Length: 238
Image 1: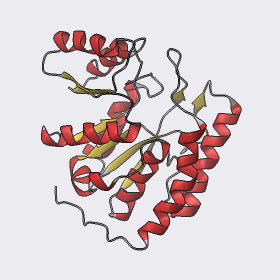
Image 2: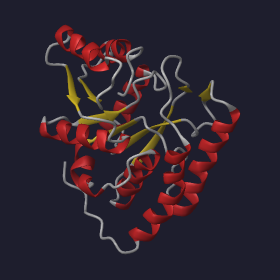
Image 3: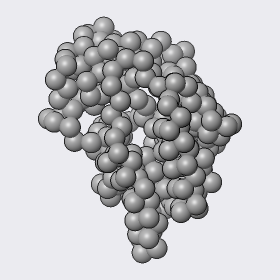
């Protein structure tokens, strides 16, 4: 979370209301709007189930998730999710991603906007086209058979994150999502897409900018060329 005071309490409540018990870890990069204080109130409301890692300054989406993944591994979680805090990702869909990994053999389950067409609500058409064709571009360059390569709503089985050599994940912005999927793909993990409807945030401000998108466009080429010279680790046994 970064400056998510409008959404912080509500998204935590929504996740905690799922039929399967879940815990929440918030990574907050020094939000000046008081996001961390709101999360700490929820920690008191859900003792032991809601936690926060506070970092100084904006260090990037990718490093935030890596920090969270490492904490989840250290704490022994078997299924680890990443999701946005602004309700673009519907907490109701968490169970479908969990089911794909826990019961249907997937190692990585992606909440996909594009597996059954274009399921995006309230985005400007220009951004829809940019996102859709960015994913198509990534498929062409990398060879992955994934339609929503930039998706940020994902469930990982523990062994995936144990295998991926998280300290070697280099991208911090939009391209982070691509790099994680590409690395899992190169390691031989089973990746599936679960259809979701993505709804543009109602409250708060989007963190997307042209620099983040540019990193993804040029980063994909670097990912592909680097893969020719890298030996990817074999999956850790579950």
